[in-house]
Length: 318
Image 1 (tube, rainbow, N blue to C red):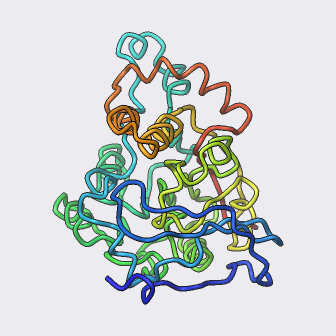
Image 2: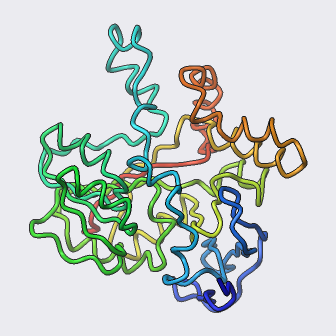
């Protein structure tokens, strides 16, 4: 692959003048694919993005078939299940406290739901089992085929070019998707035309305002270069949603240190501690219930907006 031929230099999507500051340079930490990429910050609106970046045609190279979200629905529902003993006794409280991924849904009646970046359809199935009429959008044909084989309607292709759903939506969800889009404002503007006025848009993204980003820099696991084209803070996420016709209603900070542990593993591996680094990188997915031991400190950091990811509820701006 001729990497330089597949790169594009794109200005700030908010229309700011060209006055970017390079924050760091990094590479693919997960598959060791070639290329070094700059992460820049617009000095006008403060939006952080990857630039230059792979263009849409070249980007598929950085999504190999073993890309982890393609193996599941993109957001591990198992982490939402509390320890059985507590679940039986304190179900409502424990569901709230131990919602590590904080994909908490708003109080909306069962209806029509669209999942953007639905991968192999695990979350579609989860919501269909609850009575929702579901459909999805997925860029990867391989991942989408798994969801389609489960019986779900999936638009295969980019969200920016997805067609209008047959029916107005009550709910749109996207778990760690917005940061992957080449044209998030176009996609967000389209989606606010698809949803009912009283519907909700729920999305999660990494939190570039967390201490993890400043501490680990180009070894931050949630940076995921070059797949992540944008690196949002609560302020820049609010701004880009507002510019696209949305208004944030609530922000939840994830009560987990998964990305912190994986980032520590990336740092140690880069310094030659291959075995220990690899174990820490895999710890968030292999720890099972041991990860609950980290909950108290993660919960404290979440109170100050300092954990590595966030979920927001947004509605169409009136």
